[in-house]
View 1 (cartoon, rainbow, N blue to C red):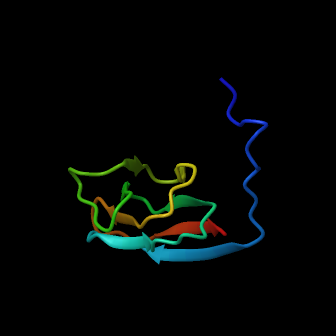
View 2 (view 1 turned 30 degrees about the vertical axis):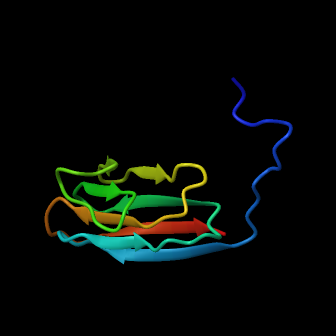
Length: 101
């Protein structure tokens, strides 16, 4: 099955917004909902695991994915809702986020 259809218009982005979110052992919003979002990437630049959920809150036992230190996550195609994250324990570091609009 092809990943794109010749009948669908290609999704294009002309702007990237860069954000760094400081690591926290509490649930934080990594990206607010944005109807103009075309895509996003998250890089865990922290020595502990980052848990991510496609909602306003995340918990260590309820998450979409977890990023090991130095790992990268690409947002599912077409998702424009909020994204929450929290690190496994308190640590120095951050998430490098790029939102394509």
